[in-house]
Length: 130
Ligand code: HEC
Image 1: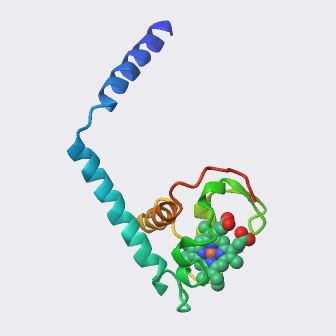
Image 2: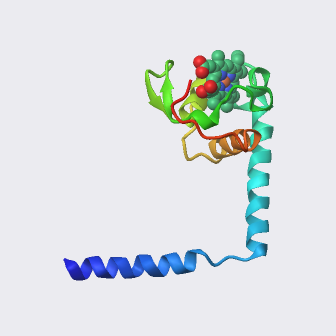
């Protein structure tokens, strides 16, 4: 048992050492990837394609206004429990847009969340706040 634990510790230590190895070029590439995903989120935000009634997120939340990503997870009345933000994204897709839920791992969900996070960049985290 103890030997297994030490082996796991050894693997974790190696992983930590290697995890810090990245270059300026890596940082630029990763930032560009983030920008392109957030840009796709902005496109979806202003398009009616997630719903069935011609409504887009941006009509009620221009520039991601009133999305408050910094307050999640928090209790949401509409869901009756503590929820994550993607669950409220799906609530709005189902209700104002009359569309179908996105899987939380769907690339379109990631794009919407990236766009919201980018618009609210720099706001201090306040989980649970109303
Ligand atoms: C017809 C207006 C309308 C449209 C269109 C709309 N929403 Fe909402 N949205 C609301 C309302 C109303 C709430 C509930 C506010 C509350 O009680 O927190 C809300 C809440 C949210 C929240 C949680 C906000 C918070 O303060 O916690 C998110 C995130 C969100 N919407 C994302 C979206 C996304 C993504 C879309 C497009 C798929 C969208 N909304 C489309 C009206 C709209």
